[in-house]
Length: 272
Image (cartoon, rainbow, N blue to C red; front, top):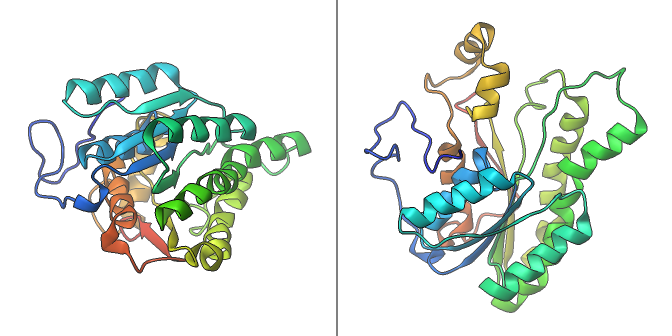
């Protein structure tokens, strides 16, 4: 079951949520759309925006986890998010979900392009079909989600797009060349659209996480060697948690970041 909050080694309250963190009144009542919001970093962002009083919509292929997250938020007294099962490789389905969610929640002031899959592969094993499939998950959805929300943001008088990048390729990580290609393109997408969108006061930024301790990462790759790698490469001793990424995303979505655009913000405990 997806967790509302992921505890970190820092001070937390009984629910596991970090204490004494900022609230962003400008997010209250705003409509937010998140891709890949059912688990991991995406679920942390869904919960974080719901706590701020935003109206949240998300898509994910994981039906059970998505419904569990929605129920947890409702049980906590927060507004139940709008969500649909959607394979973002189907751009028509993704844009239809965005349109349907906007009809119910209002035009989106915030878009978070979070969905991604870092499945491991070798240079030799990649076929043209596999390459295209990796791009269809890790690259294409962000562009076409922006295309879908931009008209509504213009009607609102502005908005904020946050694209999730990665520090993995910047640190020359191995084992996922197609993922590295796709994630390196995120900065190009951000900078390439900043001027166009900026004329309508739509901001666009990249948030690049380091090695975040999601359930999947812990299960698949956090072994004894991984622990050594963390100690060797991070400047800070604590493990990155999904809510650490969510906090940066909240700031960039809010009016506090009104003059931030075309930038990359790393949240990696000083790895890169």
